Length: 242
Image 1 (cartoon, rainbow, N blue to C red):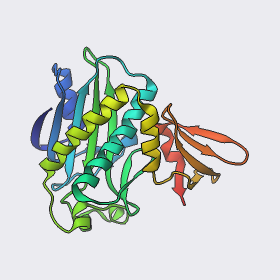
Image 2: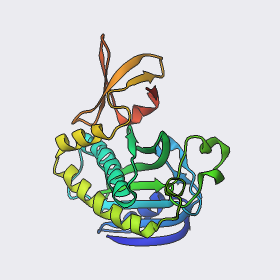
Image 3: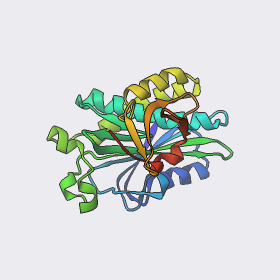
């Protein structure tokens, strides 16, 4: 998988899309030292100063993907990040549904999935990891809930080494997803999910037990009275867990 490196971009997702629209056929990675308008889920921005890892992995698809397969890409990629960082740094991290990576309750990494249907379908996986950018230099509104690898392991890390390992993990996880090995993904995701079997509070103040994701890519919440299923785009309705 070829890596194309930039110093500064508006967004690696936008650059990856440009390459696809210009006729890219093979898998590739866009890696930038910083983003001026990094994109997160639900139109959120990703603070992207120098020192962080900002990459978009573009994977060509042989066939169009069903809705549940796209959802599973979120989960398999989150697991790929956990596997990569655990292997390289021996740290204990968890996934906050649907796909934020947390260390001791603080956000270390996140991802964004965009499925592009064109003359050649592509899955673009955007990943942001706080690596060598110390959170003490983050804006005040981010400091309390964010953390960086350098804050955890107390030394700088090689971003290119992390990207190379992510390539391996993402290709493995995408193969598993495309082969519809959802049962294994569900088990692995739930084992690594912070909210699994915890009490979850919704925006309407209702409380449920989180029973994890199912093979349709939905989060299952249960109470004595009812069961609810949530799609990834509804994650904003889950406001807390304990």
